[in-house]
Image (tube, rainbow, N blue to C red; front, side):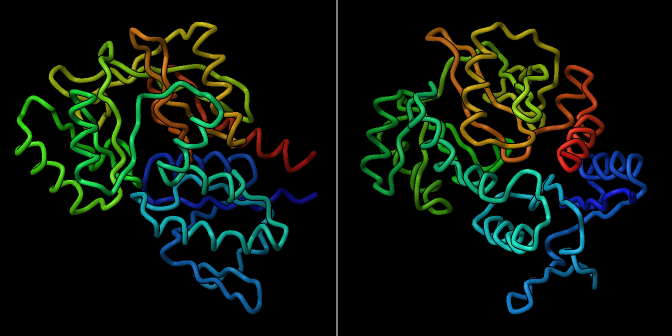
Length: 296
């Protein structure tokens, strides 16, 4: 029987996209990296085309990255992939499950509704309510609804004075009409990425922040380390990821004086942190999982 033809939606040239395509090619002999910017959907015929190739002829598709940066446009790209599911192409992870995680508010509400502990959060378009949130929290992180790796996030402190606080909020709201505001927590200089494949916990890595940086992202000078998560953390992250049912994901968790909290469940999950932090070759393991799912 012929090996399945499985495409990768991602960013051509980016390490994680190419690593996944490499692993698929090694296992099946087939390689196709798909940039959604060059995909067209024919709703009348039910076909989806990429550089002249009808993607509805694929056996499966893996979504590694839908766009370079999250935005409402990312949701449009995901909706186009419904054409494939309708045609019987298996998409990893299912489109509607990814969609629930692209918008930060949708992810947060799903976690809160499942009683997953999170930082105190307020969402508003009101300048007065945003000022009140900063005053109540003392220090608040303002986050765009669509972003990754702390892009566009800003910390606003109550002790700057009400006028300065209002100016900073107005500057943020100019680009983010709906403001997502979380209390800034005192973290131990790191947070955790907890890795899951098919709902199975694989391990955890720590993102250790650069001295003086308020966040731990690699973009802000942080680095990866291995981490041995205790049973409480594993149980919490397992509950959080189970809400969304992704084939592969990472759960961002932080330990605080009040106990562990979840920041988010990733729509796609990080390959690099798993490799650098705990030596897990996710692309190879993910491909093995996909092939078993297709054969089932």
